[in-house]
Length: 285
Ligand SMILES: Nc1nc(=O)c2c([nH]1)NC[C@@H]1CN(c3ccc(C(=O)N[C@@H](CCC(=O)O)C(=O)O)cc3)CN21
Ligand SMILES: CC(C)C(=O)C(=O)O
Ligand SMILES: [Mg+2]
Image (cartoon, rainbow, N blue to C red; front, side):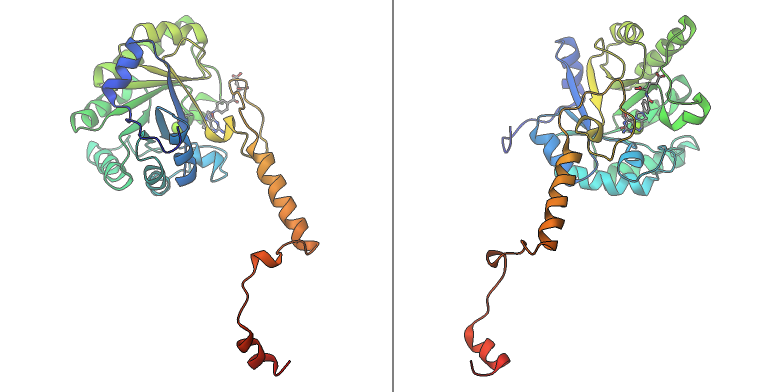
């Protein structure tokens, strides 16, 4: 509820939500107002997704997104949603070098951005990294299935877990992440039955996007669920709950028209000086 104090989620509360079969609602946000609105709307988790590369910065992929980009946006989000559990994506290639470099990058995100947790894409191959970060006191969210930072290796934004072999690999990766200390795992664009099957075998919650109703929570991109962009192909897994793009375009169009027709500003929008000043400027009237 707007203005009402609400207790933020914690890693242990999120696990309890799974045990109690209470769905977890996560949404992305990228700046102060979107974070504030997501908090007021009651989101359990706000994700500062590297999808900001697509929806805020206009890139085709998340690959160009830098640590500085993530810091800039995370700072705004944490200022906007002070009572919400905030997760920030570690961007492309900031957690695949030395453990020192990874800790340096994670440290900057945690100290300067001040989220509650970090999210990393990948499975068993990054489990040692997840272990190191969690041992250092940083909650880590995993991300499996379609991992957009590997889009060129995957060969497109394709549904994952279609073969029995792929499904087994996803399960092994999920178990490896859980074992390494991940507190939750995003399953992106995973076949519904496979996502449900994995969710049942984990103690930690899964959060699905395009992974069906069998996950323990759901996440959508802010701009997708509110239709806040110029278009782009509609994704099958998205439900749109508002059309703020149309609202914004209409509002600006009305303003432009009013300026051109001299309907704006009106007298009530302007500030009047005192008569003596006017007299001194224009001479005696
Ligand atoms: N605006 C936005 N929304 C997202 O959900 C999102 C991003 N950007 N950027 C980062 C990743 C990339 N994601 C994507 C991108 C494309 C598809 C896509 O084309 N999906 C097709 C299905 C593909 C298939 O059938 O194999 C679809 O119709 O949903 C899905 C997820 C999810 N993430
Ligand atoms: C789609 C979600 C899970 C994400 O990683 C992002 O928004 O960057
Ligand atoms: Mg992401």
